[in-house]
Image 1 (tube, rainbow, N blue to C red):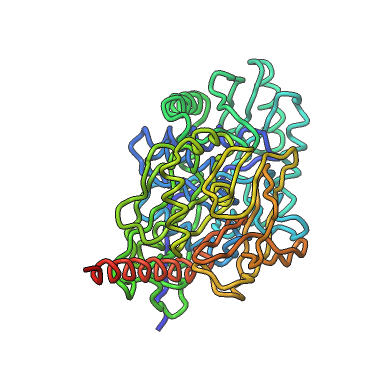
Image 2 (cartoon, rainbow, N blue to C red; image 1 turned 90 degrees about the vertical axis):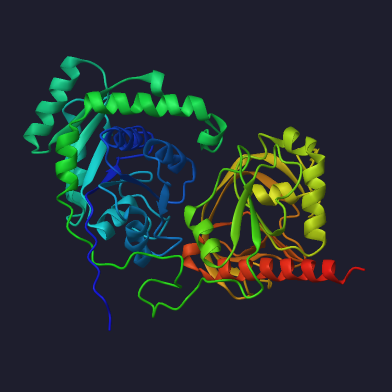
Length: 477
C-alpha cells in the first residue's frame, strides 16, 4: 500500500536574470526579516553552493539546505525540500545564477526554474535596476513568458538610485502588469566580502556576518512588502511527496533501511570544521548518524588531536589555501591524521580535504598521507561531473555512480594515484583522486543523499576500525 503525502508550506523562490543581481542580499534579508517576526523559516539554496547556506542558517537559526537537481536528481528535490521545511511557517529558496541557467548543455536541468517547477513555488525576480528604467518591463516580460510553467509572482527592484528612478520603474512594471514587491536602494554598507571562490564563509567572520545579516534584514524590512510576499508564498499549492529521510535508502522505494546501528558498534566519526573546512551538506551528518555513527566536529586549526575514539575521518571542502601556514603549524594534528590514515583508518576527503592530506600546499607541509603536492592556480576549475568509482574504497564500491561538482583554484600533482578515486564520464573522460588503504581523497564534491549507501559503507568501515582497535587493546598483556 502506497501512502499519499501532502506537504503544505508557504514558499518562495528568489531568482534573478543573472548572477550579481542581488539574490543573496534579498533572500538572506527576507529570511532574517521573517524570522524576526517569529516565523520558523526554512532556508534553501538551489545548486551546489556551500557558502550562501551559511548566511541563510545565520538568518534563520536552521540548517541551510541545498536543492540540486543534477547531483541528487529531479525526483529528490521536493522530498529534500519537505525534509528541511517540515514544521516551518515559510520556506525561502535562493536560486542559482540566472533563473533559466542550469547544467551546461542539459537544458533546464539544475536551473532555478526547474527547482521552482518541482516545488510548485511562485518566483520573485530580483532585478538590478541600476542602469535601466522603462526597459525593465521588457526584461521582466521576457522572463515571465519564456516558460509558462514558471509562475513569476512579482519583482524586487535592487540598486535603485533615487525616488524619480523608482517612479519610472514602477510605472513601467505597472504597464506590464507585474507587481513590485520591494525596492532596495544602493547600500554598500551591507555588502559582504568576497574572494576567489565567492563570499567569505560565515565561520571566518562570525561577528561581522551577524551584523551584515541584521543590516540585510533591516534593508529588506524597510524596502519590501513582507505581507504581500507572505501572501504570495501562501499561494503555493500542496506538494504530493514523501519527505526524504536519512533512515531510508530513498523516498517511496520500499522504505528499506539505510540506517540503524552499525554492525560493529557505534563508531565515532570525526568531521573537520572550523574556518578552514566550512563546506558540508547537512544531510551528510544526518546520514552518518542514521547509519549508527556518533559524529563529532573538530577544528584542524586549533585541535592538536583527533577526537577520542575516532574510527572514521571526514575532511570536506573549504579554504585550506587561506590557512595553509596555520594548518602546517599544527604539527601534532598533522601527525595524528597521518598516523590514523597509515594504520588503515577510513578517511573521506573532498577538495580541501584532499589538499590537507597532500605532502604540501603552496610549499607548506601538510599531512603527507598522499604522495602529491598542491598549489594555488590562476585557473578556476568549475562544473558538474558524472563519475564512477574506479577503485573499491571505504566510501564507495568500484562501479558506484555519482554526480558531483568541482569548484577550486588549486591543482594537485599528480592528479590521480595508482588507484584513482573516480573516473569522470562527462563532460570529459579522465581519472582523478586517490584511494589507498582506507583513504578516499578527491576534488569531487558529492551529495550523499543521492546515494545513501556511501554513508552506510563509511560508517561500517569506521565501526570495523573501532572494533579492531578495541580488540587489539584487549589482547595486549
